[in-house]
Every structure is written in structure tokens, then in C-alpha cells.
Image (cartoon, rainbow, N blue to C red; front, side):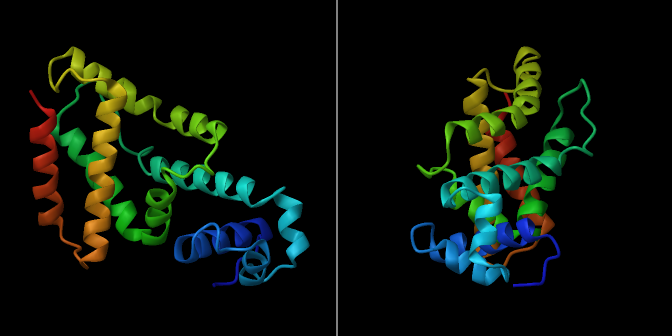
Amino acid sequence: MAKVENKKEAIMESALELFTTKGFDNTSTASISRNAGVATGTLFTYFDNKVELINELYLSTKKELFGVLLPVEVTDDFSMDFARTIWTTMIRWGLDNPTRMKFIIQYSSSPYISKLTWDGIDTEMEMTRRIFSKAVEEGKIKDLSLDYLGYITISHIYATIIFMITNGIDDDEFIETVFSTMWDMLKI
């Protein structure tokens, strides 16, 4: 693992690596600390236990993913180009951060992720709900549950990223083809 100045950040990066490769149950706090280059007691300075650590790591990783969308200009006019920008931005982040992407997918259904963490992620999803709500109102996309629209869209993005990582694909034309499939599914 690369040397990290901030001990808490080093612990989180170490946990990310180990949780993704060995799994939660097969990763001890001692191995996280050792991999981070800190004393085991240092981990407990920042986290009460491993469950608290995975929750903070999951929330921060999801916020990082949604954070790449902040520079995307949100307009009042939901369009295919706007949807393509969101889609491509998230795909690119996933391809640039394969370990983080694998972690998000691996732990998105984990019983270790608490309701409090999900509530924090739900706040990040509010922009998505507003965008989908307006697009549904304007008759631009299918009138489905906003949460369902969010789930099918993000699931499609995750599946695309993992497929591309697994198969060594880094091709804008492929991203566009898969986006077109998703767009056809959503539009009226």
C-alpha cells in the first residue's frame, strides 16, 4: 500500500483494499492496521470497531462517487445529452477507481451497512430524485417510482463499469452504445 500521511486515511485505504480482496469477515483490525502502517490501537482512535469503519468507508466512497457529478451543470431541461453526461461521468469514475467501485458493489447489500449510513447516502440521492421527478412530470421518461428509476439506472451503471473492468474495455464507443440502451429503456 502507498504511504499516506493522514493515519485515518491510511486506515480507510487499507480497509478498502482488504475488504475488497479478502472480505469483511476475513479481515482483522490487526491486518488493517498492519497494512496501513499504524499500530492496531491507532485504528481504535478513529473507529470503535470494524463495523463503524466499514460504514464510514462505504459512505465516504459513495459520496466520492456522487461528488464527481457536482461539476455537472444541472439544467431545467432534462435531455438525452444531460443524461449522457451523468452516465459517462460516473462510468469514467468507476473505471478510474476500480477498487472503490468493486467495494461499493460488493457491500451495497451488506448487512454491515447501517440505516444511518443509508440515510446519509439517501441525502446524496436527492438530486437524482429531483431530476427524475421533473423528467417524469415533463413526459420525457417513463412514469415509474423515482427510487426504482434510481435503482435501475445506478445498477446499469455499476454493471457497465464492472463488465468493462473485468473485460479490459476502455472504449467511449462502447460506453455510448450501452448508454443508448439505457436511454431507450427510460424514455417514453
